[in-house]
Amino acid sequence: MEKILIVEDEEKLRDELKQFLQNNGYNVVVLEDFNDTISYIKKIDVDLILLDINIPNINGEIVCKEVRKEKSTPIIMVTSRNTEIDELLSINYGADDFITKPYNTQILLARIDRLLKRSCNISDKVAYKDLILDMSSSSIKKRDIVVPLSRNELKIFYFLLLNKGKIVSRESLINYLWDNDEFVDDNTLTVNINRLRNKLFSIEEEEVIITKRGQGYIVL
Amino acid sequence: MKVENFLRDKVFSMIIVFLGILILSCILLLVQLNIYYILFIIIIVIFLYILILLYDYSKRNAFYKNVSKLLFEMDKKYLIQELLKDSNFLEGNLLLEYMYDINKTYIEHLNEYKFANEEFKEYIELWCHEIKTPIATSKLIIDNNNSKVSQDILEEVDKIENYVLQVLYYARSENVEKDYIITKVHLKEVINNVIRNNKKDLINKKIKIRIFENDVIVNSDDKWLEYIINQIILNSIKYSKEENAFIEISVKENTNNCILEILDNGIGIKDVELKDVFNKGFTGTNGRKKYVSTGMGLYLVKKLCNKLGADVEIVSKENVETKVFIVFPNSSMHNIN
Image (tube, rainbow over all chains, first blue to last red):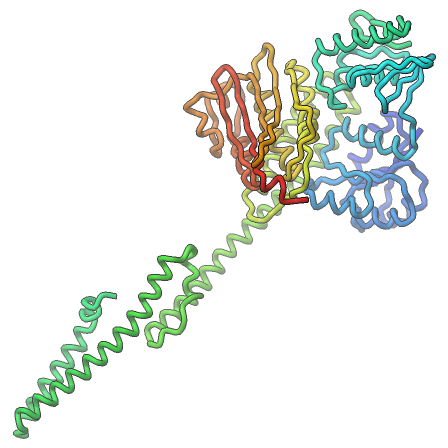
C-alpha cells in the first residue's frame, strides 16, 4: 500500500483528507508539528507528498525546493490561489503537480494515481486468464492473436478488470469513462459493451463479461 | 482671448489714463505751453499706453491660447498643469501655482480612493482564497460520508464554489493589472476539464456531449478560459430541454482567427433580449422564469474574453438553439513561439 504524507495546517481539512485517502486505499501519514517541517519531510520515507503552500513558519514553495535537493519523492502542491504565476513557481521549485482548492476529490485521486504509477513504474499491461490487455497499443492479445480495441472499449474493459470479482454498475462505468474524457451516454455504453463482447467472442472468450440484471456487469 | 474682451477688462486703467491725460493737458494749458507741444505729448503718452496694452495682450494671449489648445488636444485634461511652462506674467504664474496645489490635493484625494479600492480588491481575493479551504473540507466530508443527503449538499456546495469564483473573477476583471499569463493552451484539455467538472449534471440530465477531436492550440490563460467556458456550459445545462438535449463543441481554424463554437439545443434566447445578454445585471425572461440569475455570468464572460484579447458572440433562436462563439484572433494565436 502506498504511503502518502499530508502537509496541511488546517486540522479539519487534514483529518478529512486523511480519511478520504485511507478510504481509497492509501496509507496516510500527517505532519502535525510545523516547527521543523523540512527536516521532518527529509527524514520520513513516503511515496508521495501532498504539500500545502500556506503552512505556518515557512512557505511551502521553499519546503518543496529544499526537499527536492535530497529526495525525488513526487510532490503535489496544494493551494487556494489559482493563478498561473503560483503554478509556474511551484513547478519551478520542483513540484510534480499542482492542484487548487477546493479540489474535485476524483481529480485529486486521479492525479495521485497518475504520479504514483509514474514513479513506481506499474506496467501498462493487464493480464486476465490467458488474455493480455495492452493499454499502450489499445488491444487484447491472446497468445498470438491481437484484437484492436476502440478507446471506449479499452477503458471499459480496463475498468472491469480493475474491479475483478466486483459488480460494476452502469453508473459507475459511465462515471469512470467521463473522468477519463470519454463523454458517453447510456446507449453508447450499451453499444460499446456489445462490441467488446463480440470482439471477445471472436477469440473464443465468451463468458468474460457477465451481465447482472438490474445491477451491472462483472468480470470473474 | 478676444481683443474686445481684453479691452473691456482694461476699461478702468483706460479711464485712469484718460483722466491723467486730461489733468496733464489742463496743467500744461495753465502754464501756457504751445498747443502743438501739448498735442504731441498727448500722442506720445497714448502711443506708449497702446504699446503697453499690446505687450500685455500678446503675452496673455500666447499663454491662454496654449492652454486652450492643450485642453482641446489632451485626453487626460487634469494633467495640463504638467505641460504648462512659465507664463512670463504674474497672474499666469499665480494661476500655475494654484493649479499645482489644487491638482496635488485632487490626486491625493483620488489616490485615497484608489488605495481603498485596491485594498478592497485584495481583501476580496484573500477572502475567496480563505473560503476555499472550508469548501474543500466540506467536499471531503461529503465524500467520506456518502449518502443521498450528502450528495444533495454537494450540489449546493458546488453552487457556492461557483459563486465564490464569480466574485474572484469579478474582482480581477475590474482591475487594470494583469492577473493572467498567456501560454499555449490546448483547447480540448480545457473543455474536457469543464465537461468533467459538470459531469454530474450532464449525466443526470442525459445531455449528450459531442466534442471536436483535433488538438487545437490557442494562446490564452487556461484558468481564465476554463472559467469562461464553464460559465457557458453552465448556462447550456441550466437552460437545456428535458428531451434529447445535447451540447456540441466544435472549432474552426481560419487564417486570421480560431473560432470555438458551443452549440446547445436548449430553450434559447428571445431576439429582443440578445443584444443585452452581456450587460451587467441583465436577467432575461429565461433568467427570471427558470432560475435565480445574477446577470453576472455572461457579463464576466465578455469582460474576461476581452481582457484576453478574444471576442465572444451569441446567436440564438428561441426554443431551437443557442450558439456561443469565442473568437481567438490570430495575433494572440501566434505571438508566442
